[in-house]
Structure formats: C-alpha cells, structure tokens
Length: 56
Image (cartoon, one colour):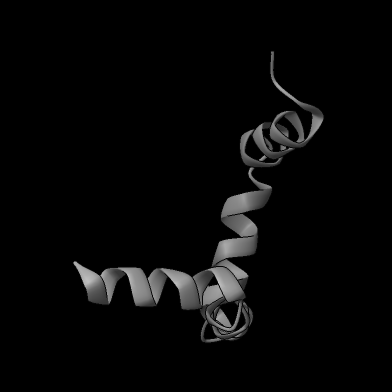
C-alpha cells in the first residue's frame, strides 16, 4: 500500500509540477537545493556517517 505522502509525490510528478519546479530551481542557480544540502550535512546522522566511513 502506498502512503499518502508517496501518493502525493506521484501526483506531483504526473501533473508535471516536479519538472516545472526543477526548471525554476535550475534558473535560480539551485539556491534552494544548495541550502537543503548544507542543512542536511549539519544533521547528527551525517556526522555519524562521516565517522563510520573513516573507519572503513
């Protein structure tokens, strides 16, 4: 069974909204994506992952 979040994402893609959003993001020089990536790196799980990868 697909949960409501996944279903909404599928509808978003099928309606072409994802492509439109991506084109706008690309025109804005990926500012939102870059901000999300910077924020994501600061999460505790990323620090744990970094330490684990150093051990391998």
